[in-house]
Image (tube, rainbow, N blue to C red; front, side, top):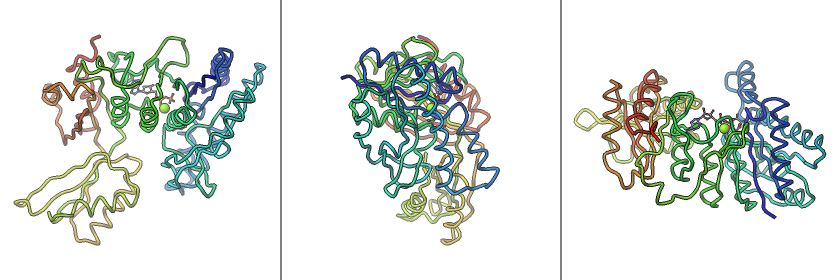
Length: 406
Ligand code: ADP
Ligand code: ASP
Ligand code: MG
C-alpha cells in the first residue's frame, strides 16, 4: 500500500481549528487508500516561548534540560492531533521520538539521527491507524531525550519518508511553496514549480529558513520527492527533486539572506603550516558550527588573522573557546562582529554559466553596499555584508539575476 508522510509546521497547527484542518487532510489521504504518517511541530511560537522562558531562569541552561523542555512542545501537538482524528471517527496514535525508536547521537540541541526503527510505526499502520510523530526529537542510546536543531521537524519527516519508503513527503507550511527568495523580505519573489535537491540543500544551508537542510540530505540520498505546499489551500506548491536538464537552463535559481550570523576572528597568529588545522580542530572539538572561513595575512605574510562565521546562538561559546586558545598559545585579540549578514545566490546552472560572480558584485556595487568577505562553492556565491545592508543587498541581487521575472 502506498505510504505518504505529511509534515505540519508550527503555524499550520497553531490553534484548534488549524489542528482540525490538518487532521482532515490526513484523513482524506487515508480515505484515498494511503498509509499516512504525520509529523507535527510545536504549536505556533511555542518553541520560541519555551526558549525565552528558559533564558529568564538561566542565561545558559544545560542543553540536556533544554531538550527536555523543548520536546514538550511537540508532545502537546501530537496528542491534540490524535484527539482531532479520533473525534472525526478515525483511528490514530501519537508517538514521541523515543516511543517510535528514533535514535540519535548524544549532542543535545543539535543531535543527528543514527537509526530509526520501523517496527512500531509499521505495526500501527498495519492496524489501520494514522501515525502521528513528534517532529524534531529523538532519544540517544542511553535513553536521554534529544532534539535535532531548530526547524528540524522537516528532517524527522524526510528521514521517516526515507526509511519507510514513502512515495512522497509533503511539507505543509505557511507559504504556498519555495520562492526565489524569502517573500517576507522581497515581495517580488516568485514561486518555483520545481527545484533540485542540490539547489534546495544549498539554499537551506545559506539561510532559506523554509526547509531544514538535513531534510533535503535524506530526501536526496533516498530519492524521496518532497512537495512543499500551503496548509491553507489545495493548490500545488513546489516539488523538490532530482536535477533535470531543464533545471540547468538558468544560472541562478534563488537568493537568500542569513541574518543569525556572527564572525569570530583570531588575530596575530603565526602564519605557519598547520595553524589553521590547529584552530579548527579545537573549534570542532567543541561542536561549534563553522559557516565560512575568513583568512588574511599581513606583516609580509608572517602573521595571519583566521576566523569564521557561525550561528549567533553559538557565538558566546565560540568566543570562549577562541579566547582560551589565544591565551594558551599567545595569539592576539579575538574579534567578534555580530553586525553581519550573508547574502547568497544559488543555482545548479552555475556549473555551466559564467559571469555569475561579476553580476552579483556589480549589483552590490550599484547599491553601494560594501562586501566584507566572499565565499564560493560549485553552485553558491556568498558575500558577508553589514547587517543593516542585508535586505537591500538581497533585493539588489534578486533583481540583478531577473529572479522577479517569470
Ligand atoms: P514551518 O513552521 O511551517 O516549518 P517556517 O517558518 O520554518 O515554517 O518556514 C516558512 C517560512 O520560510 C515562510 O513563511 C517564509 O517567510 C520563509 N522563507 C524563507 N525563504 C523562503 C523561500 N525561498 N521560499 C519560501 N519561503 C521562504
Ligand atoms: N518546534 C521546533 C522549532 O521551532 C521544530 C520545528 O518546528 O521544526 O524549531
Ligand atoms: Mg520550518
